[in-house]
Length: 246
Image (cartoon, rainbow, N blue to C red; front, side, top):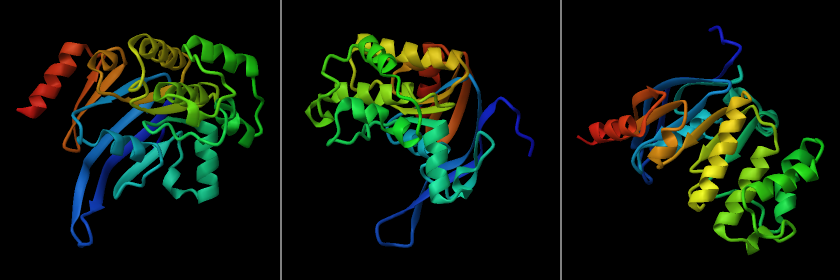
């Protein structure tokens, strides 16, 4: 298979099954999904709760191996790498914004932001970090432990951690879920700016208006990829989601 230079993600015929309790029965939660994403492309994944959005994001990003199918990120199958190389690949090439933030409570906010940079022996630009925190209306002291921060402030720390990492691809699971309207727009605009600079961004969201501002919207229903909408409008996404219900 020939991979185009600007193609960042290629998943083919991906399925994901999980065991049901202690029985040998399994439940398939992703069904034969194929899609691609290119450098500089901003994709949104939308669908009702339980449709498989986060599961798809985790399979695409190298965090959760699919039961079958092929996943390629930047020409590499992350599931074929040894654990240490897989961790280094994710750290150096991929940014993650999780719903659960994945911060270290015993470290200050600033140290959480720069930890991936230090692990990769990369330069820490304190001025840039300070500017980003100010830009997204982070009102706490960066020297405060994250355990003392509100959910919204913790989410901002997790977002800045990704923004300063110079990742080539960013996977974001409801990146603005805990934020106010103004902060949501600021964060989205920063992600859009990164996409304009060539970063590939895959974002799970329930926000139809936000999805409509991305380059491509992917709608899921019960683990099936239903539609891929280029240059989507809110009306098109809303209609697609309602069609899936009927």
